[in-house]
Length: 254
Length: 329
Image 1 (cartoon, each protein chain N blue to C red):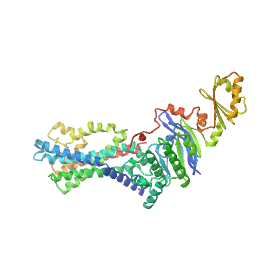
Image 2: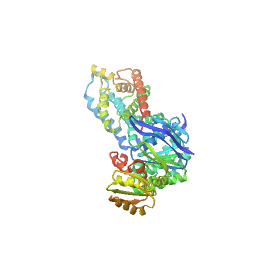
Image 3: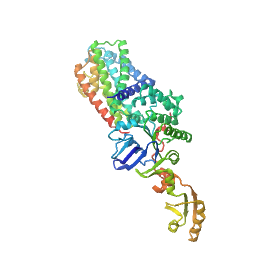
Image 4: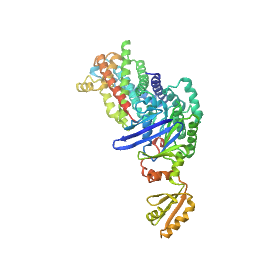
């Protein structure tokens, strides 16, 4: 790989950072929305009892789910925003540059992951400040690994969507009829372990492994599967999504 | 030296042949234009030459690099200004140039000096720190031209460089194109469906229609091929008159169109009385008659059998103005 490729990765990353910092409204919605979920759901369901939670507090259970959600939304948006570049023509400029398309994907993914992780950490710090206990130092490290994997997977998924869609019209549809239900049965907002049917469906849901693994790492309890199992599943899904997303992007003609 | 060479270049989209077996070459330092109506295959040709589309058949080289096998070498040697703006509106003008220069491997010092140079060339120095989304249509075009020049390309491709711009801005863009051709000795390949643009800018043009090149030559030669002057008339019996005129030596070219006839002649104004006289002798009534210097439209008409404007009319569903220009920023 020559210096041009590094420059391309850097440029794509830097561009993402500038966009992130300039879109003030996006920063606000991307942070405020999960905070609303965290605080409102957290205080609303505090009174509810979930038998499968045992003596784990609902708010502590919820926090990792919301962090996962924030990263998921933000990263998916990065992937789908390729559409934006297509509409504004900027994609052509990138595609005629003497650089590998793979470098463009790497730069974009790293950019998306950086912004998503920043958002994820902001939510996490607020949650910790509000009293969510952290299990261990090792837990923090595995949590970061999970956050990175969630981010890469979602960017990949976003790229797949972007290559299959021609405009933003269908994006809200996909969010509402695909992502939201998946999120609901991922145990991000409420435990699924108490209900046998729900749990069976959850096993078929990639988001479940992400949320469960992140929860196990962060609060060290209330996770259904051992962390290494979730990790393996998420890792494989991540590879598949990234590979497919990059492949479809590299094949795209403008 | 030939900077662009194509050989039987072809592109098919399913059953549609967008570019049909075209062969041409462009010399170093030349401004070469493709003139043709919308949908003639101009943009498809540019996309193939700039490695964005794979040709279905044939070959092409840019600065002796093959567009299929040496894509990266080709990309280093070309600058492209697309028909539709390809800028990042959320970045400043300077940032757009800076990022471009990085991807083309310019060193830090070089980037700095070159950005100043090209911004000066297109008179955008005072707008360098302004977000592109605040630029006007003409400013965006100028910035794109500047960006196309950043990495010292051997050839600059301009796809409909003044589409959707007002008359004043078009003039300015033309001046910049001439200037960079002269000052940087950049070879320029442009496409247009504006006669005046082709006439003002190009050393040589190729007339393209339905994916085929009909003729390539210097503009003056093309006009002379139509005749020194063009007389257009309609009469009560065009066919009979044409038959009679075929015997007349002073008429260089006769062409029948749907409801009028054009003649290529020398000293057209002196020939009008003769034509009317001949018609009267044969009891044919001349309904209208006019004489003018040949334009590129006449050239186009003589090669395709219709004017470029007729064609535009047929293609009305394909809006001439790309959606990007319509959206207000």
